[in-house]
Length: 358
Image 1 (tube, rainbow, N blue to C red):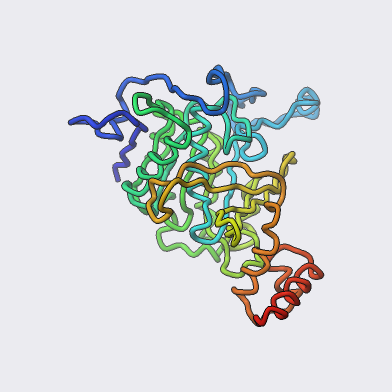
Image 2 (cartoon, helix red, strand yellow):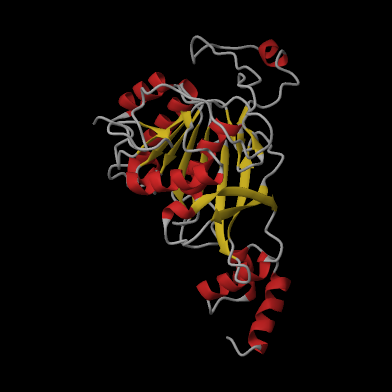
């Protein structure tokens, strides 16, 4: 299978390139940085990692001691570590793919993700979409570019995307290796896991092992990978769908829970991060920014960090949404589903009942 890459190009359409020109077009600088001042200088991702000539090299206690005091090699602070993969889970349409598409664009252009998490060494990023068609991805890119104030006469030479549709990751690992080696992204995003399985069951460890092994090999050999997947319909299970060993393969995991603020109309996602390296921020929320009709993909303007924990005032909305999903649920079950305390849930249920709603 021949996978063709596209490069972001927000210039006016031409006869040959259109809005999304060929990968080999010359690079141009970015302008209009909304995050303040000049675009940060490019720099190597720090701290540097010592690459062993062989994965089977045996090391000593002294080798470990010489690394004392070193900080974890974050490519994106608290979200993505060098030589690893991050697993992002959520139910469908919960902003996971959209947020990481925005992250790719913003990390390359401004060395930030969601206007908050530092990505100081990122110059190149690759977004691989296996579900959505190119026209939808491109509409979102144009909308995000407007939100980031990337002008029509500027390009983002380090950002690339590809929409190959479903493919067998195990069978086509060699081709993917060739693309990563040729284009050298500092991180890559793959959306989504189920389209890489080619009939394998994600409930069977023996069938998933080759898939997870391929992701780990690629992340160590070329660049860290963000792998997007789905979570069970049962909202009490805040994890990736599949066996327990699915999550065990990833040093960092993220779980999104989408919530609509009924009063303001805002769309938010509550995000929980769990990492073996110890993140500073492991519980925060993201906000979706749009401009115009939300039914039109190009009206999206970006994803921004909203703060620690749940958005203020969103707790009641989350509990009410959980009750709508499970009208017969007990306070304990609603508390587990919504992520809030049982006593708080009981109060909301009492208020709901006093207003004549079951």
